[in-house]
Image: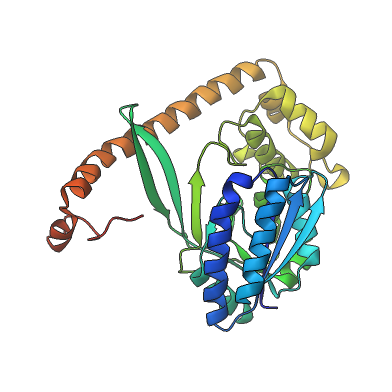
Length: 336
């Protein structure tokens, strides 16, 4: 098997119809390229509706003979526990996740497999993000943007997650780095990638890896206080104090005490860092930090909304082909 992709499912029925269409399309393209694709679905306490969608997908894949699919039913567990379970069951030389609400592309999978066969351990790609915003707080706008794949830089890649959920990596790398830390609920992929930087460099792909849609129910929802806590735990474990940010002090201390502190391998935390995280006035610092983050996000949304006005007018008036010839816009077609 060339490529194995793992999907963790929990109350995902609303996404499964679109996911099935994308899987069938991608599997057919991957097969045309001469590669064998395996899909492993780890269904957490699946509903009857989810089971029906899964059976329909299996039937369609068997009829088209474009991919192999295995289903594992489990009690509810963290997404990273399901990823580990799927990785252990996978037979592919290349491994990667496929979140049910994301769209992966065949072109990136094909490129990634070839890069890994040529000696790369992990491949990351540019990808698209779709945001749903409201113009002037009223008119709904669907904003699609491209996140470029920056040249690999170890320091940058240990500060924040790069490549979103469209990574592809060698089975041997997963075995060397070890499993995803199942304590994490949001940032386990980032924590695993940080460990990867200790033993190898990442390879940059050129094809679009896929599309990530911000719909408010994503695992990495920016409003979840656990996200700041988990990112801090990653940096605390490595002694990278300059990347620590304020967090919910009660949640921060509880998570660090219960599972974040790995004991002898964790460096001693300086007093000024413990004061920042759960010392006196830590709750006030956390609230001020939240306000700053909300203001920053609001500025981004306002900027995107202002740019969306001329784009909307151009598209509705059918002016894009003309303006593209004049060099005013980049593309003659609407990016969907």
